[in-house]
Amino acid sequence: MAEGPRILIAGAGIGGLALAQALRHGGLDVAVYERDPTPLTRGQGYRLHIDPNGNAALRSCLPARVLDRIRRTSGVNGDLVAAYTPRLERVTIQIFPGITADEITHVDRETFRKGLLTGLTDVVRFGRTVTGYRITGSGRVRVEFADGGSDEGDLLIGADGVGSAVRRQLLPHATVRDVGLRCIYGRMPIDAGTESLVPEDFHRGFCWVADDDGYGAGFAPVRFRFRPPGASDYLMTTLVATSRRLGLSDEELFGLSPVQLWQIAVRATESWHPVLRQLLAHADPDTFFPIVIRAGERLDPWPSGPVTLLGDAIHTMPPTGGVGANTALQDAATLSGALLAAARGGTSLTEAVAAYERVMLPRGFDTVENSLRMAGQMFAH
Image (spheres, rainbow, N blue to C red):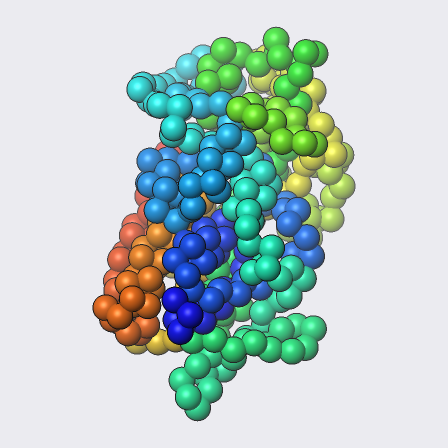
């Protein structure tokens, strides 16, 4: 499609890259601008759950060779979600039988991002932070960069995450609220010395432990089907609590070193079952970092135009439902389908964006609310 529209994407996260793959494969001119200086991820988490909706979106967006790489470097499939007391007494369990080898149940975030970058080296520009945009007299969009310069296209998609500069300009009234929880991520290497420490259920999927004192901890394995160079199997660990329970302000929490964060997780669980304590004691102290858990507030539709949003940039998702990546992937599949149909002559770009937003907005914010309800259940005490 030599005469098709030019699409600009702010953000090379999961949703932005899946969208770029679909549009590029469909023959459109795409440019992606990412603030990270390299493909290495910032502290955003380690293991991502991929559900049936996410799998369907990946099949829709990705060329076969890219999807094959993602599948080969994903984790060995898990089939369980369970909850426990700090004494390691099982409270609930859900098993998902019949998962086929073609399905992906989880991925390592950094490996996943590298896979999504396959074939996009001439499309993604790292170290370019989009700070804003303006609509030109001809109705096109010109984006501005923090280090100077600009670019112009027919449509801008803000896929630039919770702190989206595109959202701030397009929807200055949009609210992303702090839900009051802080999460400390880390991971324990799974190797010959630690394999036997992992309980049977914890080998199979995501396991949640919560006490009556305001602490919760999640554990989930990543064992690569095919281990990429430099990667190793691990057990993701997360400690979740309120700032008040941690006894630290955000300034204090985010000023701590990884080792100090690891020590917080170890101390917080010192009265738990010895098996659980060992998982944190054997974690790699250098892998720990904190995040603030936030959620987007539901918005009414706005007039559609040459700028739209995708993923956490619009419906910021708490991680409690394990669906943030999947919802961003669904956004990418819905938007790419509408844009490619428009490029083939079916509709205008504005009509395509409007059709996407009619689906994306209720779906995204319904999912946010479901994730918040799950957070309430996980912290029922």
